Amino acid sequence: MPRITHFAIPSDDPERAQKFYSEVFGWKFDKWDGPMEYWMIKTGEDNEPGINGGLARRMPGQIGMTNTIEVPSLDDYTSKIVSKGGQILIPMMPILGIGYFATCMDTEGNIFGMIQMDKSAK
Image 1 (cartoon, rainbow, N blue to C red):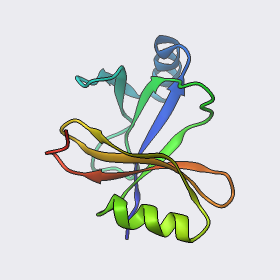
Image 2: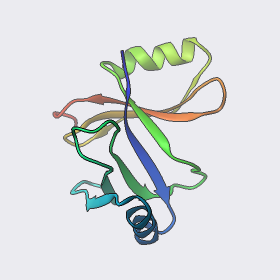
Image 3: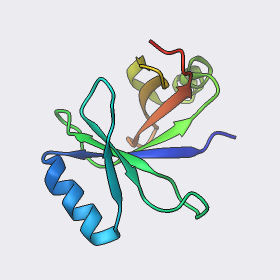
């Protein structure tokens, strides 16, 4: 069964946001060595319940955190979403060396991401 495996926080000022979350919750931030400006967030120890996330500059119109659900096949799950009344807002795109990602909306207007892990993604 697919589960939420990651969250992303949009930020107008990444330094300010990192300061806030590290001072309030003790979260740790590490700059991601990828094709976009992104910081990986460690929210706790791996043997504790919970998930880690990321922080990026806010895209125009983006509000709130985005939860990402890992699925075995984006093609299968995007088809299911559309057939059940949801929408695909940003179609599948590669994340170099990580996998494939799509941004979706449920029937209630909630936005979420889906990722299909694939280290050969280009």
